[in-house]
Amino acid sequence: MNAGPRRSHRQQDAPGTARGGRRMRSVVLGNRSARGARSVARARSAGATAGSGGGGGDGTAVGHGLRVAAAYAWRLVIVGVVAYAVFSLLGRLQLVAVALFLALVITAVLRPLADLLARHMPRTPAVVLSIGGSVLLVLGLLALVGRLVAGESGRLGSEFAGGLGRIERWLEGSPFHVSHAVLSNLQDKVAHLVSENRSVLISSALSGVGRAVEVITGLVLALFCSLFFIRSGDRFWRWFKDLIPQSARDPWDRAGRAAWRSFAGYTRGIIIVAATNAVLVGIALYALGVPLALPLTLLEFFAAFIPLVGSPVALGVATVVALATKGPVVAIVVLCLIVVIGQLEGHVLHPLVLSWAVRLHPVVVAVSVIGGSILAGVIGAVVAVPMVSVAWSVISELRRPPEPAGRSPDGPPAPL
Image 1 (cartoon, rainbow, N blue to C red):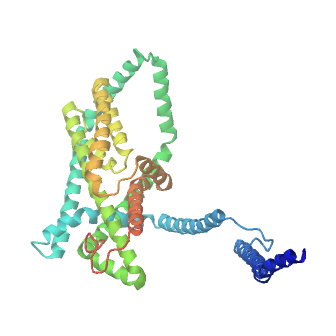
Image 2: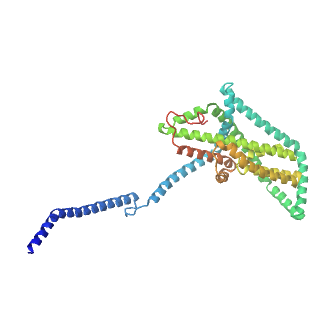
Image 3: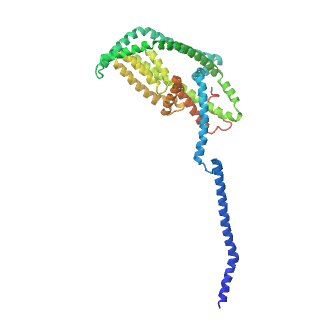
C-alpha cells in the first residue's frame, strides 16, 4: 500500500529532478559565473586606478579631485613662468614697451580721423596731417601753460606767502588751537631737511635731465610707429597671421580683433571721460578765481588716465592751491567739487562712454591699479586697466563658439 504513494511521489519528483535539477544547477552555476565576472571587473578597475594613480607601486589610488588639481597646477606654473619671463623682458626694454603702448594709443585715437581725411586725399598725407596736427595742438597747449605760469609766478609768490599766513592763523584759531611755536618748529624742520638734502635734489634734477632725453626718444619712437600703424596696420596683421600655423590662425585672428576692439574702445572712452572732467574742473576753477586754472585743468586731464586715483589727486592739488591763495572757504568748495566730479565720473560717464569696452568690476580696477603701480610705478598704474580689459576680452572671445564658415566676424578689417 505504501509502494503506490512512494512511486507516485518519485514519479512526481522525477521530472523535477530531470529538468528542474538541471535548471537549478544552471542557476547556481550562472550565479557563480556572474559573481566571478564582477570580481574580475572589480580587480581590473582597481588595477587601472592604481596604475593611473602611480603611487610608486604601492597600490594607493589618487582621487579624481587631486588629479584635476595637479593638472591645473602644472599648467598654472607654466603660465606663471612665461608671464614672469615676459614682464622681465619688458622691464629691461621699458622704453621700447612704453613707446609701443603709446603708439597703440595714438593709433586708437587718430585712426578714425585719418580714415575720415583719407576720403578726400591720399592715405599717406591724411595720416601725416592727422598726426602732425595733433602734435602741434599738444605743443601749443604746453607753450600756453608755460607762458601762463611764467607770467603769474610773481603774483603767485606773494599770494602763496599770504596764503600760508592765513593757514597759520586758521590753524592757531578754533577748532585746532595749534600753537605758533609748533608751526615755526615745523617750518624750521622743513627748511633744514631741504638744506641737508640739497645735493640729493641736485642729483635728482640732473638725472631728470637724462630722463627727459629718454622721454623725448620714446615719444619720437611712438610717433614713428603710429605713423605706420595708422597707414598700414592691416598689412602688419596679415604678416603676423602668416607666421602662425594654418590651424591656429582663426583663434588668433578672433583674439586679435577682440583685443583691439577692447583697447581702442577703452582708450577713446577714457579720453572722452578725461576731457569732460577737465572741462568741468576748468570752468569751476575759473568761476572761483583760483590761480593757475589752465595748468590745473591739464593736470586733471592727464591724471584721469589713472582710474580711481588720478582725479582725486589732481583735485587735491587744486584744493591746496585754492587754500593757499583764496582761503579755506574756496578750498572747501573745491573739495566738494572732488566729490561731485567723482560721483559723476563713476556713475554717469564711465557707464555711458565706456559701454563698448569691457566693463570691469571696481575691485578688479582697484587691484589692477595698485598692482601695476607696485610693479612699474605710474606707468604701471596707467597701463594696468587697459591690459586687464584686453585680457578679459580675449578670454571671453575664445570661449565663444567660432563664426560659421563664410561669415566674417564683426569689427574692423584688421586689429590695427
